[in-house]
Image 1 (cartoon, protein in one colour):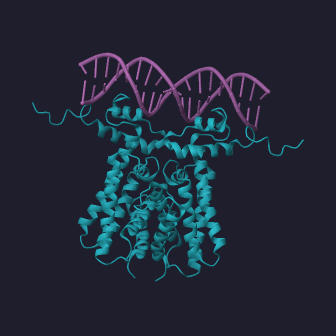
Image 2 (image 1 turned 60 degrees about the horizontal axis):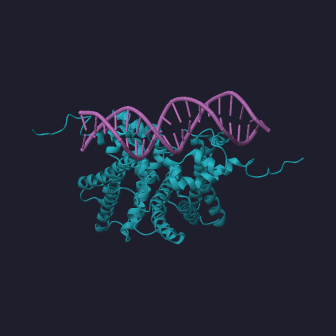
Length: 206
Length: 206
DNA sequence: ACCTGAACACCGTTCAAGT
DNA sequence: ACCTGAACACCGTTCAAGT
């Protein structure tokens, strides 16, 4: 009599199937050309089925963007547990994790602040994901301040600087703008470390 | 017998009329909902007229994005002429000009690195605009290095750091993410100055 | 509950045709 | 040269209907 996991696919997990189908399509065709009908077809359902799980095409896109924020938050948390007493290292590795995510799923990174979704006029899930990610980052910067290694400045201002730099860099990298090649994790790590050194130098107490 | 300026509108300047009509529509409805047909209607021409000036909907969007790079370049040049012997100030003001542009025309800023257009697979005009803007920024950083005020580091790396930070910040601001309000130029200047101080501290020789 | 097909008003793009 | 209207294959979204 128990239901457990339904027989997979056609029932039960359509929401996730749709998201999984959407990401490669998004990466391939760009937001402007992404079609809900195509996503539905890729997931093997009729073109109206997605409306059971997403109110809107926008809602689907918001859910994709939220994945980026979850990932960012996750990177922050992992960095904290991996380097418990090294706040500077926490910041570096959290940033690095984000850069790696950027080369892996650039389309999602683009969604996060690309103006396609609005962030102060969006579903609660996305809003919460964004806030939680920001809070995680503040936490890492705050760790450094408590340890007395950063200059005396507003923790929010320091966090904004760090996030701006990392996020900006992730966009440059995915745009292929840096004159030096940045496609592999090794290349990205090198570029990231260089920029992080300059950023951290500005944050540190002198 | 001379033609001079044509009788305005319907002839002559359609390309610019289309761009002018597109910007507010873009700001209002977002890239995903922007329609070429609507732009044409707003410019007062039939829905196929735009194809005389843009090969594609993408080409129109690229032209809009190029405006952002022109503006960035212009800001860099003005900052250099306004503060001839103060490279640090040049960087600050160039960044500030960009942030002001961002709150004025967020939709264009979003286009520049939002992944909607590709930048290494785009028309020559956009490519050139982007390269020229980057070169202008490198110039400003180079000024500072020649003056011996920045730390000894690759000029490209320093430029990438500065651009990442400023561009990242412009996205945070347009997303309304900073906890403190940043809508007026005064508010933006304050936030910009705070972040710039941290950024510059990292770039300076110690 | 979850999915479907038909329907509607709209797209981007092409093309033959007008001045 | 520059612009048009008709046409085509596609959209997002709604809705009555099926299981």
